[in-house]
Image (cartoon, rainbow, N blue to C red; front, side, top):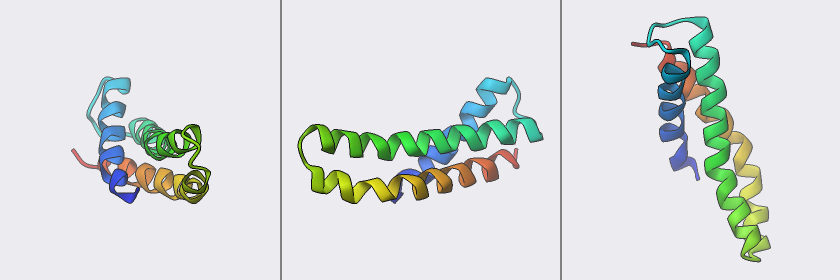
Length: 86
């Protein structure tokens, strides 16, 4: 699960460049990057949890659920860090 942190963070930074229309360092772009990175990290791990639940693997879904929040926070942090550098 934690292998998704860095790719989600980098994708969040790239998404912030697209949304804001600039690649310059700014508070606004960092804010967008943090939000996008967190959402992408949560979506990446949440998809595993939802998929496991849909397949009836409730033990796997239960075990994966506590991972979603730390991955989302770490992805948000990576995205924010990436947005501070050009």
